[in-house]
Image (cartoon, rainbow, N blue to C red; front, side, top):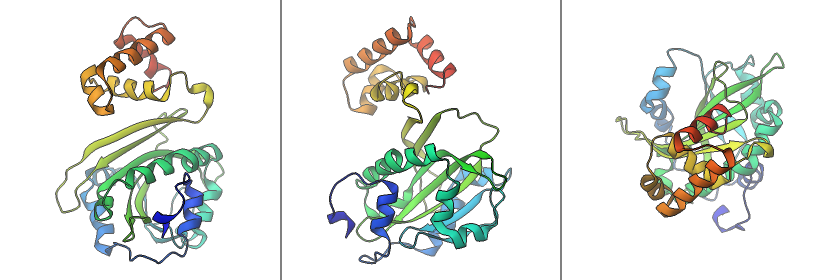
Length: 266
């Protein structure tokens, strides 16, 4: 029972090791859910018309892909179906893997811990990453997935898709967003959270909280609205904005946001 284990931070690889072979709780997966996920996601439906994504179903307990839509990044589907997560680890860019393993996935677990097991597959995680293709070159991809838990709320299946992002400049930023979707034939997608991660320490000019404030500023939110989003005071938001303007030597919020965008901070 993973929920009863130590609260020590779960990296992705630690979690896979812990959940491997676990069958203490009956998973809440229904095969129809795999189809409904893609039928409901309007982004996926429109994207399918313009590119060929990899669509997969990954069983964490077996460290194996149990469904695969076809070939991907120059690899035959069999490379994933037979190689499982080991193949993915082999082609994952080391810096991106480190970030996902140590920061992104633990925060996903923390988020899902506050969601009822039967509702977990209603949350869609979007994330950009870098993988090595069959020709030996690294390419950028967009991953969109949701999780299916066992009865205890531990994610045991990941179902999603990977699409190429080579026409989009992602720089050194890794962006993850969490959307609430509706898997009942109706499309209801709303942003729950959005966060930017950085591969290198030197890219962290602003503090973690300052960047969170900056992201909402870029979306046009007022100080009061940002305070409500982050559950902090409006005064604190204003102080963060002033601090960033001082660090970047920018006279106002508009100049600050422009500076952040030009330098790939957000």
